[in-house]
Length: 224
Ligand SMILES: [Fe+2]
Image 1 (cartoon, helix red, strand yellow):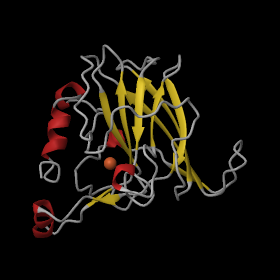
Image 2: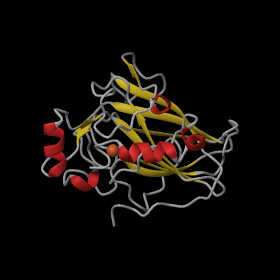
Image 3: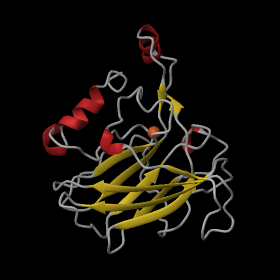
């Protein structure tokens, strides 16, 4: 209920970005982060079982507050399938599907292949469902890519990057979307320039994650 009333996002924004005075890459952790995502080399795929959806190529950089690249940062990536379910919610997906752990290179970069995700509704069978109904609100989150980035000397960066083309980008039920978290997801209708097995359309996302100096304290994983 704290999430659906915007309290969780408010607490996040008040505790980051110079106590809410500047934009921040920090966002909500959500209930689906898992420890020990399998390591993947840069450029590798996090699709571990047959998954519908258009190919997505992510290129990203991790920098400090001054824009200097941060090499050797550990980056957990996870997202829902194009059906709108995380692998732990969906018996059709392999264990750890659409999850992976990357390490930034000397320029602070990491890159990967996956499939384009869609938005999904939060559960509405409990008290939050009744709240949303009384407020005449929909239960949807816009499509987003989760990241948790760990580097000693910096606050653990918990982020979500959102697709501005999603119909719910302006009305996220969890109030998570800020301008700094809008990704340049691009749909491409011409063949991929280098990957011959990629049909059209395919998508790309390029994003810069900014870490703030501080203590690197991992959250408690919501999934055991
Ligand atoms: Fe999510």
